[in-house]
Amino acid sequence: MSHDYESRWVYRAKWTYLLSVVGVLMLPVLYTLWISFNANGFGAAEYDFTVFWYVELFKNAEIRTSLAWTVLIAAIVVAITVPMGVMAAKFYQRTRFKVPFVFLMLSPLFVPADVTAAALLVYFKNLNRLVEGLIGVELFDLSLWTAVAGQITWCLPYAFVVILVTMGRFRPEQTEAARTCGADAWQAFWQVEFPQIRPGVFSAGAFVTILSFNEYVRTNFLKGGFDTFPTYLVSYMLNTGMTPEVYAMAGLVSLVSMAAIGLVLVVALRRRIG
Amino acid sequence: MFRSFNAGGTAPARRSLWQVIVDDHGPGRIVLWIPLVFMVAFFLIPLALTLVWSVFERTMFWMEPGFTLAAYQDFFGSGRVDSFLNSVKSAAVTVAVAFILGFPIAVFVRRSVPAHAQHQAVLLFILPFMISEVIRLFALRPVLGRNGIVNDLLMSIGLVDEPISALLFTPTSVVIGEVLSFLPFMVFCGFLAMEAVPDYVFELCDDIGSGLVVTLRRVIIPLAAPGIFAAAIFIFVNSLGLFLVPDLLGGPGAANAGTLVVNAIAALDFPLAMAIAAIMVTMMVALLLIGHWLFDLTKLLEPFR
Image (cartoon, rainbow over the protein chains, first blue to last red):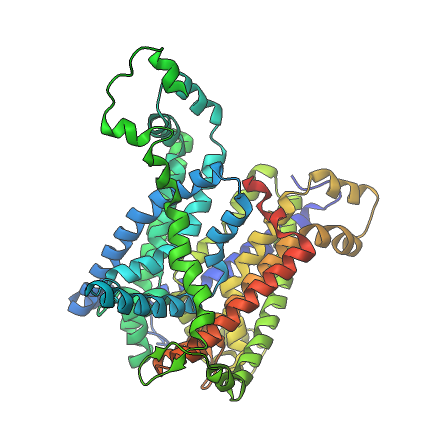
């Protein structure tokens, strides 16, 4: 259905343009993925399919450790951010100051990552000195937790928006009905509303997993003495240049993201069919 | 309220600790404040404090409270301000290119795609966004390089005789990297702004036979202005700030404001880093305020009300 005064061909041309823009945005990623499976690396005349470079990756103990850190951080960030997204959406529904609240929640998207990260780095260093002076414990020393805090400021806006949009489809009359029948606020939320917003919560979780898994700038500034997979990848790449291992690492990150997106799509489709 | 109704006037039943917590007036309400407190503590306050830290005295490895404009003098009195202004220019070019390439997509999706498929069409642009920023930028190297896929293609169709080396490690490649990173936001924000416009407005334009240019200039762009402006600020500030783009794609010496911050921190010059951060934050707030004053950006939040 195009609108009345438009020819079919113009309509098709526009779709072609839209899809080719998406294609151009995806092309570099798919191209590196393709190279990563070539036994001869980038620019070779022959293409021999192999998973050799991927196997090599997992033989490297440093890479395995960095992957473990990445997974650990992602798990913690998801476990904290998703409930916080629900709380933020609930808070938004109740507060009178909706516009300032939304501005605050979405503003991390509008500040470049390195500015936020640098500000947080100096903030944590100062807090650490302050707290150490007061109680003698280095509570805010750069560590897993500072990296987690930095990532949450980045992931929370997305979780908030996804959950808020899903909550918008929930009819508040149902909560009122539950309350009239004697349910307390928690029961009305957990037994009536939550089952209906679960898809949104699930997608927010997947979303946050991907964002956390891919996060580089903030983690690089705020991590303690460990490497996550993206920080390891970048330092490796800047040190050794574009080796086949780098392509395999990049391919691995892309594959993980694509698998997560695929999972979300499959779950969404199954729900629609079922 | 309902609880007292249920109790029916008899002596209230003993309630468990959990029931006390989740009561309408119980301490459970405080939980909803957690995200707000978190964002204030770990986002708003650190960014606001950059202004304070930027006037601190620099010491050998750190800084100490004081008032000095040395960091600002250092910034404005050196080559840094030139890099900064250069990156302002390239960020402005990025915004213009993203608008030209991305905004027609938003218009097309809103006007021509069937209503039930509009959101799915826009969501297509989330796909590239879900791949790591680092990977997408890094992946441009083999694409734009001298023996990359673009040059191969141009040579094989005979458009050029020898590979164009201006495509990688130049200011051009920085703009390409920025456009490819941030283009989806122009589509999202443009669509979000136009979603609030009822269909009959477009139908009316068709019926009175106003041409494409007039419709765009007098109807669509004014209606979508808040979205375009929000996307423009987003793209501008991020192009200015994201050090990864010049780092991975720029040539030697390529720098934007983000690079300056990162380099200052690497040199342990924290007041300078904070001064540049403060300049960026101030710039963003000023742009947002101007946009709000001109276009009322809260219109964009209409779907959330």
